[in-house]
Length: 54
Image (cartoon, rainbow, N blue to C red; front, top):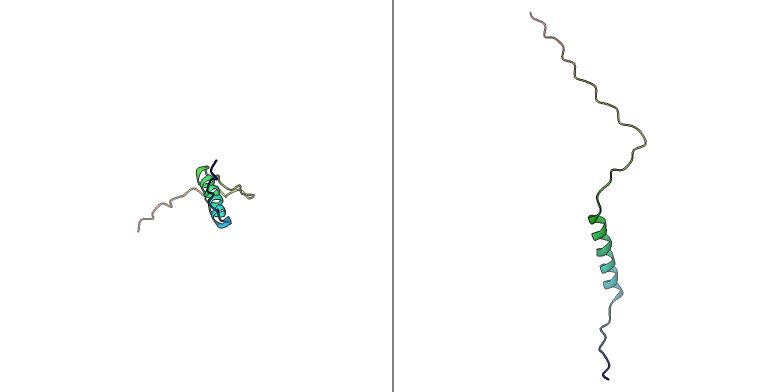
């Protein structure tokens, strides 16, 4: 039986593969809005002043 040749894998390469997997999972999940502690103020309705005739 012949001995199989094994190629050495660097730890830097494994780190890059892991970082790519995490980035891929992050981009694949839908973005969620961050919850805010303070409620947003409601916009004030725009009131148009009547134009005075001269």
